Amino acid sequence: MRSARNPLARLSTEMDGSIDQIFVSTLHRIASLAPPAAQPLVSMLLIIAGIMVVFGSCFALTTIVERKTLGRMQNRYGPNRVGPFGFFQPIADGIKMLTKEDIVPFSADKALHFLAPLVLTVPVWLAFAVLPVGRNMAAIDLDAGILFFFAIGSASELSVFMAGWSSQNKYSLIGAMRAIAQMISYEVPLLLAAMPVLMLSGSLSLADIVQAQPPGHWFLFTPWGLAGFGMFLIAATAESNRSPFDLPEGESEIIAGYLTEYSGFKYALFFLGEYLGLFAVTGLAVTLYLGGWQAPVSFLQWFPSWAWFALKFAALILLFIWARATLPRLRLDQLLNFAWKFLVPLALLNLLVAGIWWWTGRAQFPGLLIRWLVCSAILAAAYILLGRGLKDHKLPPHRYHYAV
Amino acid sequence: MLSEFPFYALALVTLFAAIAAMTLRNLVHCALCAAAAFTGVGALYLLLDAPFVGFAQLLVYVGAVAILIIFAVLLTCAAETGPGIAFSSSWLAGVCAVALVLAGLVLPILMSPSLDRLAPPVAGAPVKDIGNQLMTIYVLPLETIGLLLTAALIGAVVIAMQDKPDAQPASDVKPPPREIADKDLCLR
Image (cartoon, rainbow over all chains, first blue to last red; front, side):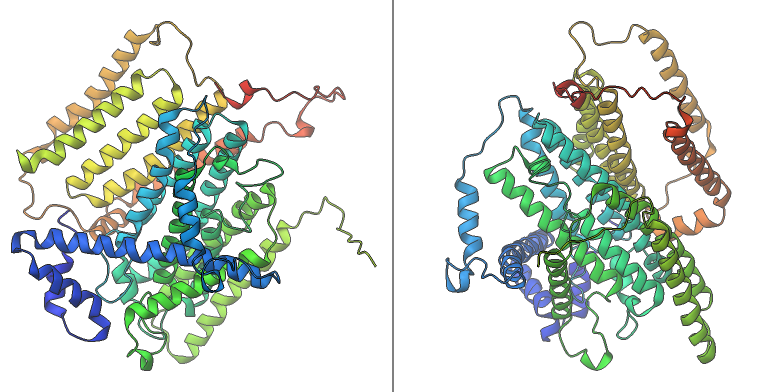
């Protein structure tokens, strides 16, 4: 694709030896060892290897950190047998997963059963290509980067369906239908929540979106940005099927949902795909609202850009783990009602608020304050009113009986 | 030839997927093959330096239309066609309709004056230009399509809301609870 700017061409002009650009300059140095004709290919392969190594080890690290944190929050130790404090548990898990027997049900649709985990995992890896993880550190800088991101993500629903249907098991099929209903419902607020960012930065390119958020002016620090960030995180949790939205699984009702008939390596691939999907959407949240690799305030700019990205990324992942440990699961009807009756109207209103914010962009000091107050008031009022409207008045109030 | 290899590979995959979508016996397989064909078309757009159209194709056709088709197949519960001939008996009428639609698409393209124009030296319009044009010159068609889609959405909601409890005739006889059989779950 010619519209994708060649990363190598930009590197050579902006190369410097500082720690901020250490990965970029190292990449450039290694690539320059290759013959000139092969240099673009070599640098692309190196970038791909880098993405796979970094986010692959992120996956291993997140599983153990998640289990340890969940354990700590639930007053237990978590895994503590393999290695110091159990930190080699992912390796043991990996070996276990790879050596397990791969069971394919007799009546399953063999080809689709085999393809489903691939259809989930392969596009998710592609999504990382457009994430700017540091200054000059996006594998490809597409003009329509965010559109690419969401277009690639649409394969995951097909994968879930393929997994559920090909297993020829009612739990699998019901689980898949549930998962697809959930994913489709939450894709709407996810896209709508991302829309104000595109409106205000005037670009679909993720690099431009990061450039539009200099230190101190992250989109998070605006009323519409804060609301959008909240909605984006909620929708992202639901999209990646994480607790409190982990309804596609339910031991007592539908067993493991569309994963019921999967074992061994294929199950591990689904697991990997789910976590990578979470990473990708978290990276997008960092890029859209938290200024990507930009520092929060300008005097902290000496800190390397990729480290800022990593810090924000890790903080959001910990937030997701925290939410998983503390929030109770929703019921399916609550889940869908929440998406369609609360998130979607609020996200649509947020578009309007972002429009107001754009039109009052030239305001001076007193007007600036009024702009802040008006925009926040609209969102807060809508939040309260929609929340009231969502209350189910038909059911009697819950009464809890505690054992004394 | 080598530079055209990606085009031929993609075209071949797209065509095969489209043929499979027409001829396979299992409707779910057909729907998935159609999704593969949509993906192939999207990739062809990318090859033509039209990333915006390509991604929109993926987002709309693979992400939404394919899922819609699959839901429709599952809800009508006839995933597997029985033995015997799989082609519709009214295939002649179908061919005529397809030929008419194709003529309606191809003739205006062949007669349009834009064919005489030379391709611009830099292929592919920046997304910003597409957005600007959509919001200025083509804003009326855009809004019309938006209105049409909203009307379709409201229509779908109205149809789905039909079986309200108070809309039904007053009969206290409730249908007996049905056993859920494998057939209802569209299992083979």
